[in-house]
Length: 179
Image 1 (cartoon, helix red, strand yellow):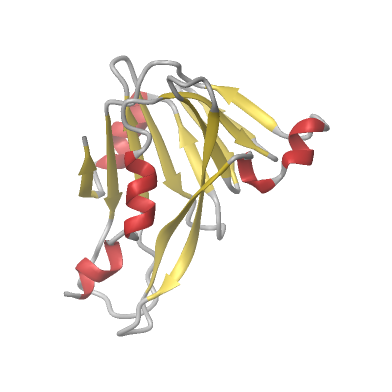
Image 2 (image 1 turned 90 degrees about the vertical axis):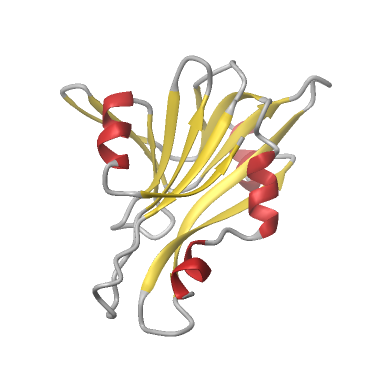
């Protein structure tokens, strides 16, 4: 039972993610971004970021996503959960965008067809273990992974390399699929 409790996204968070389906994502916005490349592996890291949605009506709204430790109510186990909220401005930092201090990566303009939520779970240990969590977005041409960065509270990797995504998914369990 505890496993189910731990991996569940809030209903509000799920509904906000569901809102991405069928929409075109224009940008990832973040106030700081770090790019790491080694061989074919490229990681875009941001402490928090917003995904900009372009709707048919032409207005833009943003889904802000960050990741944080949560403490399990029944034990000392910690795990990762996503905080997901909607805003008219990315990251609630309009001034950063206006002053040019906010980075934006134009990632895709094709529609998001499916979205999967992954979280690892290991029942063997009771003590403080951090469980990986990830969200994968699918379009008709590419996958995009948003993965919790374990060593930093609130850190999320934006992974665009498909081989890297496949390698990361091997150790994770699919928990929810929004189609």
